[in-house]
Length: 155
Image 1 (spheres, rainbow, N blue to C red):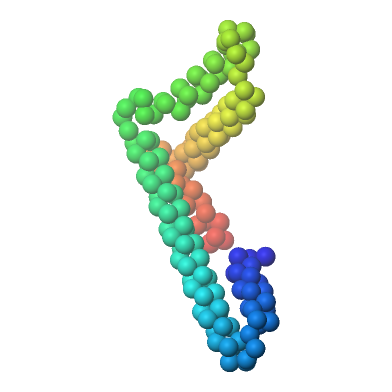
Image 2: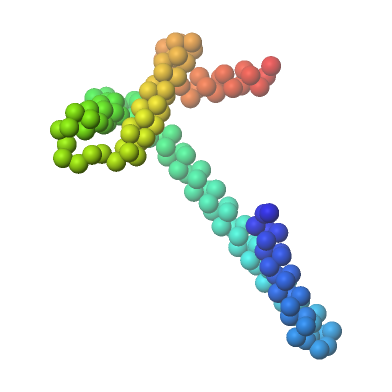
């Protein structure tokens, strides 16, 4: 059920209930018209909010792409290596936990976070390396993926 049909059902049931309160057809129709106007305003506001949400998501995606490009183009060793450093730190912390060096055990969710982080970062780097070898040095991964997608579409 979409949000629009839910809004329509809600206003429809209010209108049906209100019909019992009015004695004349004129009052009933006037109330129905006001109710439909209110329903239209609610739907319009919802559409406006959804559009704003999509604009914000687009801005976030754009900012993420710019950040990734800036990180990969940086000459700073910290900027290039902070993700592997996080994975190594998490791994060492897990080792210390399993060897009994920590007073309190790490929560089980930590292992899940480590596995997910390792998979995403390791898998992402593997894909970047394969694409760069297939496409050639000096090309940005996003350009290579775009070329592959365009080639698949044109076939």
